[in-house]
Image (cartoon, rainbow over the protein chains, first blue to last red):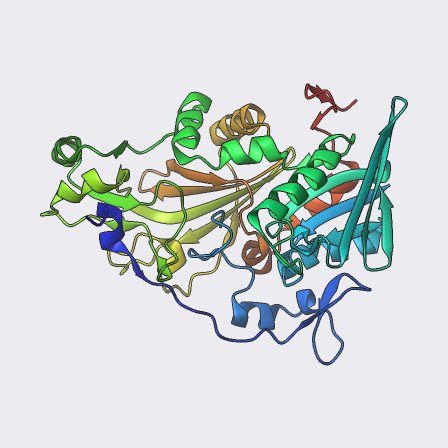
Length: 63
Length: 326
């Protein structure tokens, strides 16, 4: 009784990698441990894939 | 006048816009509706013909009437992190927050009603057709026989979720996938199935629209790419996204789409075929943009910040009718 579309499903990649930044409510920005603003560190953002279009989000289906 | 951003704390893509707003000296209040009643508070009154209200998060307090714009980026479910969350509390909190915000004169990116409608892929496909965008032949059906006949007419098909949502129990992803030539369509009866003619693409196009501005990026498909690698989100690639000009005909059609959809922001996905035609796949009203900006250097975050600060466009009056800003 599985819908046809789900024949093409695959296990979601669970991103267990913890983000190396913390939200600073004063700045309203995420900050790296060395005090830099996370959004300016493109290398970190690329490594984490946190700004990319990735299917499978639990809460948002607009990628 | 303050820009209100509704999103989660970990949303670093929103950070890119907050940074631009900070640089411009524009007041910003950022909060996640999920934190309502536990960190976020609201109050509004409607007395003697006058309404006023406030929102607070931490030590920040903003007047509802002092909002210039609302950016609905990636908000959590209202009150979902309350001390005692419940479906009832979520509904109460959602109605209180969004109801009060809808009563302001703030511009929305995107208007919640327009956003809700714009998420429907069948509606997107029809609007794209009406707007003059090429749409690959598509069938959405629960009739197995209709699927079989469609596959006879269009032998090379892909399948993808109608909603774009992915099953969670257990967590699975459903990429756009090529349908096997000998596929058995009987299971189409068990759920609406979206079948679409596969576009033999030479590139993926992501066109980000912010107000009147169109910023397009192109990612070439590798010459040795396997034809089964359909979904760019799941395909390993070393090709970067590069800026690309938008064909005039596409510009006109996309502007028509955005106007009809009443959206201030939209992320369009196209497949570019060997003739250079951009085939419309979908328009995500809250699509990601950080990866495009980082690859291309296109000022998407700055353009969003500019729109939230000064943008012109449609807004919703408290009475519910739409008007254009002067």
